[in-house]
Structure formats: structure tokens, C-alpha cells
Image (tube, rainbow, N blue to C red; front, side, top):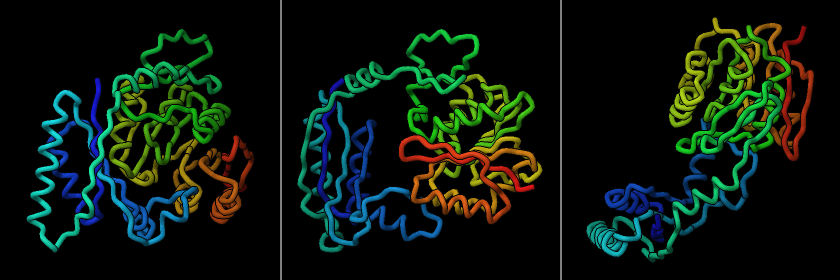
Length: 316
């Protein structure tokens, strides 16, 4: 199916108004690209942290805000005309109180279905030791020693292609036993917790502060047939300190791992294993120091490309 992407050049103040107008005319998505959002997040104490970010993004200077939506090509002329008319009316009603910017509009044709088909065509099963991540549209016959984690094309899902995810999956295979209780902190789409159960763990607890990630993890646990052995919580960490993990995993950024250092060990058994990933070299010593300060010691270090993963245990 073909779509028309409509982009409006506006300001931070008017971007939400334009977004609301667009949502009245499309079911295919609206996006706002605004430098001010990144600046605001960086100023919040409870904000998300990035290991990599262009310094120019945090400079407080005027910039164009882009609001985009997608409209089916067969109705694009009529629908886009209505959107532009409503935006013009909103500007008139706003008067001088709300700056709308140039309101320059651009349009381009995009092939939605073609893009999906190309993406599917180039995706292949990913081998991560005994775990194989397989797109659901590929007929894959696993070897006797392999465990398949299915990739649902309808939901966001960590594919295992990224070095940080693959290192976690590979490392956990060294420690998981049939009696293992596993805890996945910052579970995202649930690939680590699901893999843990597929590897034979008795139970996996998954936590995330993002409600979309929680929904995705719940869906993917069902989709992979492991829901009975997984518990998904909408929280930073497990609130129940009685739950003790044999293996804990946290694939986040170095800054967040440092922030969570005082809290993570409370749910790790004294003989348990903690696997940390998502660490770039410039954050490596910082993360190590944060966990050493709370009684943990590094017993193994793994590197892939620019990324590091650590295996830690409680100091004896």
C-alpha cells in the first residue's frame, strides 16, 4: 500500500496543536521531531540517559520543529487539504499568543508494504548459542540442542542483533539451570527473560518502567508459550525483596546501571550471578566502581565491538 508523508515545519509551542489535528485524519501515525524534547529530558533528574548523543542536540537555540503524518495515497489530496485548512484555522484562532512558525509543508510518497516486505526478506534467524531468534514468517526447523525465540512482526522486539543483547543471551547460558530463578531488569520486549525460560529456567521475573515495554513483554511471553513461567512488572526493580534471583540481567546504559547499583543486589542470591550489558568503554570503569562499592565483584568481562558486558557476584 502506498502512503503520502506530510511534513509541517512549525514551532515547539504549536507542535501539539498540529499533531492533534493530524490525528483526526490518520490512523497511520504522527511524529514530532523537536530538539526541545531532548533538552527537557536531560534536565530532569529522573530522565533517561544516553551513552551517545550529539552535543549540538542540547544547545538551546531556535530550531525548526517537524510534525509528520501518513495518509493513504488514494485519499491523500482530500485529507491533506483538510489538515492544512484546520491548521490555518488554528493559527487564526491562536492569534499572536501562539507562534506557528512558517507552516511550510512538504509531501513525499512512501511504500509501506514494500518496506515491510524488504525488511522481512533480509531478516534471517540469529544464532546465539543454544538460542535462535526466528522471525515468525520463516519456517525454521531447530536442531535438537536449539531453543527458538519467535519474533512477532506485529510487535516491537529486541532481535538479538545488537551486541549488548547477544552478549547477555550468550553469557546467561553459562549459568542457567532447571532450578534457576531469573530476573530481567529493564526487560524491554522481554527477549532476555523469554530466552532464560527457553534455556530451562524455572521462573523469570521481568521489570520495566515503560508501559509499552511491559505490554510488549507480556505479549511476547504469550507468543512464545512461556507466559506461565514469566511475571512482568511495571516498575524499576522488583518491589518484593523476598524474590531472590539465581541469575539477574540488566541490559541498559552505563548511566542507568550506575544509578541502579545500590538497589539491584537486594534481589540477587548470595551465590547468584549478575550480568550487566549496554556499557561503552568510557563508562566501563564507572559501572565497575559503582557495583564494587555495593559489595559486588567482576568475575568475567566480555567485549563485542564498542560494547562491554560484565558478570558479577557478591564478594565473599
